[in-house]
Picture 1 (cartoon, rainbow, N blue to C red):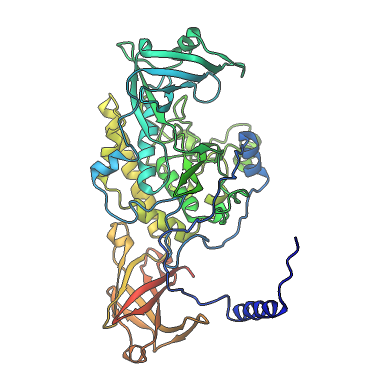
Picture 2: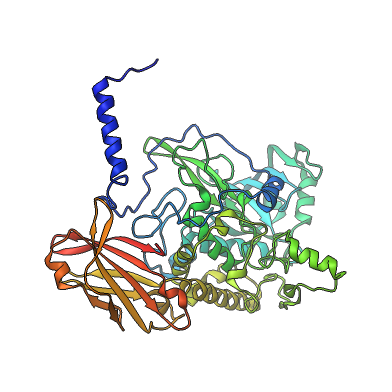
Length: 547
């Protein structure tokens, strides 16, 4: 039915819209800024399952230019340049300090499968043969094995990566190291298997025997496996690293412009998660408080660290896309005499670790299997955000998480710990120094501005030679800035606002701050700070890195 609005209401609506347009779409800051959590108030119960073709995803991202590739700021950050909590991301390490126990516990709520294991389905084809079980508590787990040539490798990589990605803020499954004996498994009635020919049929004991032959086993005949607890909610397919999900009313930010997906590039480089693509994600429908939302999860970390899931990671991983024209054509033109530099990189012979190193590794040059639009759009402030979170993981924390992989070879634990610490230090140094590193600004009631230097706090950049500060008064209604006095210079992260500015009793003041270091020219990129009067003091309501 067509609705006819009264003419006076139409006129009023037009005038309101015109006024908002003339005012630049409202004030610069609202009373609830900065927000700590995205609202996501719309019901998403009508979302339907979607599929992503692995082959098409490769072709689209490698050759067709998926998504929007533009140099624009992340669109889902709040006014102080942070990522609000959402169905995508939760501030954990980024918001508070974690104990070693909390870090090693990660997302785990239990100890893994309990009692008898009943197989409900299996698969022999694909990257990771395995089966699905139901334990005595009724919980579903997906069981995956290590390859015989690399026992403990894939399961260890999954457990380590899962705990780190959870601490860094992402939604992940609970992954446990489990021990299996063949006689403790029961094939459930009606259990189906996808065989090597891709046919689905009823599973029998011969299928189970064949699956176990593909797995590394211990000297006592038992098997070590990864038990991945099924995620809560109804699976509705993977997400893409670009665009939005059209049937999800809360999915309003293009994925390639979400900071947590852009910054995931830094975390993936650290853990060599070259398989960071759509196929290794899963959206689930979860209900709470009478409303259904989509939760966006990362999963399947068998191709992280030195693991390539079914074999040791390829030396190419992290160094070159699956398809790159330039090195391919150079190799062809030189009849194979050109040798890619990464081919010459040495690796220790530690089967449970696979191939990962820290000497040749350069964070800025690291690459996933094929182009990822969110990674390509990552700006210095996105990578700074990620590096700052990563810097809060201590060396002892790294060692503790690596120990949860339960490697039987002490050399594996020691080598992988030292390698991840060295890679972490490189990631932090590269991207904390890639832009202005000022953090934690405060303005006292007396007008004293203090701040800290993230690079200096992480001990990767040293102190700045000097800082410059330009104070301004902000007209919040129009966003207009007016200089208040001459630019100041300070040798320490402390300065005072001009008396003339404070005596005017403005509601908002701003400061443009630059840092200077001879080795890091990017420190001089401007940082805008905005403070709102709050009683007798000031509250930080705005921070713009590289405005």
